[in-house]
Image (cartoon, rainbow, N blue to C red; front, side, top):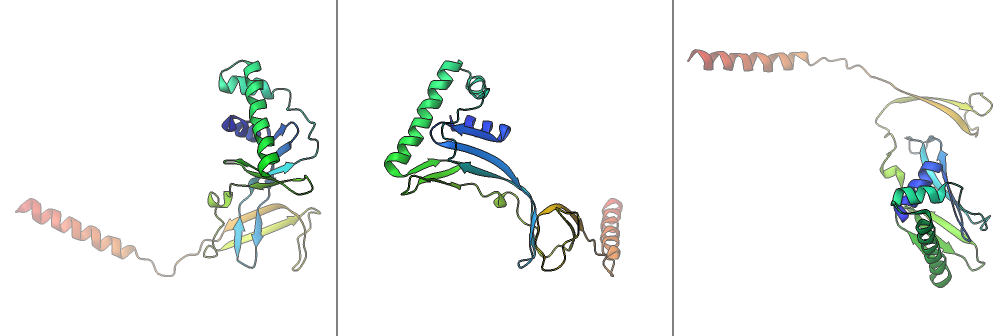
Length: 191
């Protein structure tokens, strides 16, 4: 069941579980960690809100589940209810519900739910390391360049890799290797 729910979440960017809350997929923009000298790629981030726990799944949700699981819609509804009941029971009894591949939901002492995403997409999208020379152009939300020390939301980031030319060409090494291979081939052929 979980793999279908994850697929639905990433395709539709929202998924509601009645009496629990809603998951949202939002895009975190690229950012620069100037202290470390790293450029982090934009990435999708999963958020959770327990507000609107009375919200029902979207209109086409059960059609999607039925089609993906190759079962009828009534059976899909029953399996989804069983899955959501298990999550709510885990939260009630253990104060923790694990959603492998997605994260975990914990229940606080004041009956608030807290979500911790499991996946770290930085492992898939590593930052650009300081050894690469980059030139970054930033535009703020007001389309004015950010001055040193200013903070703002970066709407657009243009990254250019600066190509350095070497002062020494090493073409002659390849030429010597080709001449040596040719000489050995000629000696072998005429013996």
